[in-house]
Length: 149
Image (cartoon, rainbow, N blue to C red; front, side):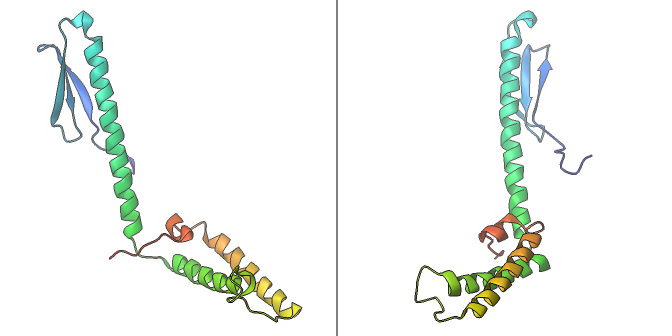
């Protein structure tokens, strides 16, 4: 079995004796029946059963992806993610001090050498954040990560 393979999918089966297509969910429970009159005229029932199976598979896949996404978000922060958050916090503080639209937050009266030192440090932090961005989850990068309660 592959790592992300779903073991049981919804499916439809033909019950020729009862002239019906039966749709089962992923647990094997019967969901619905699509009856037909004659074997040579069973295509509409077969298409209806297959369409229902496709819808069930789409819903199941979406539910499992959402569950996996929530499980991934529930994990505690790794050391790299903690480092990313800390560097981002420092970078933002420097950015606000240098370029904030709110002039009351800006540091005024810096000489050119100080401005250059601030900019160089911000560049170093930005390069490190770009490196860390490859191994940090998107919610941390976007600032939407919420620690599990």
